[in-house]
Image (cartoon, rainbow, N blue to C red; front, side):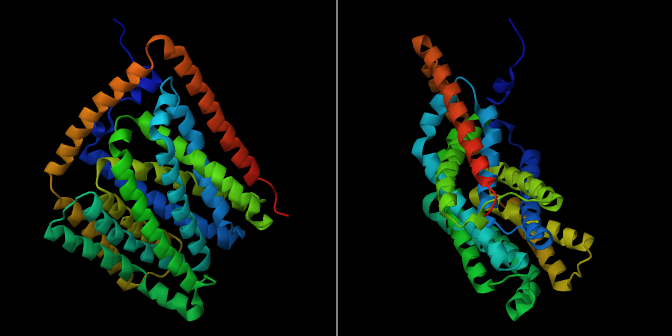
Amino acid sequence: SEIGFSTFELFEWPAMAMASRWSVAATALVIALCWTSGVFTTKLLQQNCGYKKPYLLTYLHELGVTAISVPIACSRQFWPRCKTMGVRAMALGLLAFGANISFMVALVLTSASSAMTLEQLTPVFIAGLSFAFLKERYQACQIFWLVVAILGSVLTARSDMKACHGGACDGSMPLLGDFLVVITCLTAALYMVCFKIIFAKQCGTSFQMLFTYFVMKGMSVAVVGGIILLFLPDSNRGLPSDSCGWTYLGINMIANMSFNVSLAWGLLVVSPLACRLFVLLGLPASLLLDSLLGTTIAVQRILGVALVSCGVAGFECFGPKEESERISETTEITTDEELSTLSQVSTGSSQKQTRGSSFFFSLVALGICAAGFALSGIPAG
């Protein structure tokens, strides 16, 4: 018998079976660092390079994730996987796109610290939605540490918020920006809970299934977002014209694409609330970045970061240990059933037709991405 695996067969290993404390910790670190890097590079693009196109940035992020997902997801089962995802993945993609646009616009209107602080309302919305729809129950000590983490995040940028609303920040319309951040919190919470309900078991079967979801999600955003881009003022289109803009844009693209993928992976291995709390770990990273940039650090900010770190650690430590084992067992059963179904679809006389449909659909996905990038690069009039 032959021993070995193809590149795509390696992606078929069950995601949950690979999930361990170390992989969850690594995911938390990637989520926090990528979120912080994305926010800071967005502000640097605006301040240092004069590149203020929040809609286009969000659109480019989605195109980038879709472009890298197609080669990973593409196999002879690609088309059957896409059909199982269907309209649900596309609808969730548009919901996530709306949440991202709202936050990117808010970063133009208010300070980064205000946006990052108010966005910590997201765990509150997630907790409520998870309690109602996912039947999740939290222990008293978990709720305590959740409150500690949220209070720490608010305390972290309290002085910055006062300065901003006093007219001393880089935001042009801070109140409107803060309102958009709250809208972001609600839509982001809804997206994460819906993803857990609809696709957690399905995407947990393999990495290919997860990246197939990104393909379907990205295609809907590429088409709908591209049509919207055509009707926006010409100033919303056009890529950077100097090295400064391209440098920060490249870093911003990598950070946000990595954040999207790692956040989805986190939703597969932990609860939506725990996954969202990982984002709070970006506040210590932002503190370190500000220190390196020579920004004066207030004592209350250091205290806030300490509370955030303790809150996230406490919430995870006091969570029920048996829940992860139950999720892993459930996902393993789903994996066997899903792969068996996909195997039946691709056998017999329909095997060549399935393979051809998968190849054709992958070309369509790449073509849509290419069209979106071309549309984004049209110079502003």
